Amino acid sequence: MAEAAVQEKVYTIDDIYALPDGERAELVDGKIYYMAPPGRTHQKISWKLHQAIGNYIDSKGGQCEVYAAPFAVFLSEDDINYIEPDISVICDTSKLDEKGCHGAPDWIIEVVSPGSKRMDYYTKLFKYRTAGVKEYWIVDYEKNCITVYDFQNDSGDDYTFSDTIPVGIYPDLEIDLSKINK
Image (cartoon, one colour):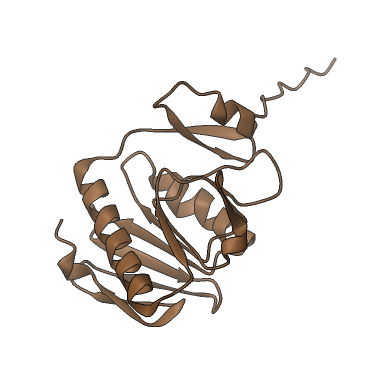
């Protein structure tokens, strides 16, 4: 006689919204991934990148909007995927409402924390690519490495914190990471 397979519970966005105040998690294909609070270096890098991008958009009078976590991104039309990228840039503002972004942002940046490496380097890379994100940066300050994926041109490049990185979705924007003091 064969053993019955154990079926894992599939969580939904309702489960995310039911979390106790202050508890953060992401939902990927019905699995909950709890998030530890980010450290000081993580927050500093995230804030400086957010500031640089926001200043650029403002200086150009651009229509794109930049959001820092916690900001909800619903990559697909289902109720089993909910993420909070560290930085999201959305140029199609029709995707935005009070709950967050419905569909793929144009550009996502994840600042890696010790507990998020597998999620940022593998799970989210696949999810972002298949959802239609144009550009994805993985900022890993422990490795002094920034991996830039340009999904529009199917390319990836590695940089360090002493480099100036060109932004694929903005041909005239480069971010000087040496100014992002760790």
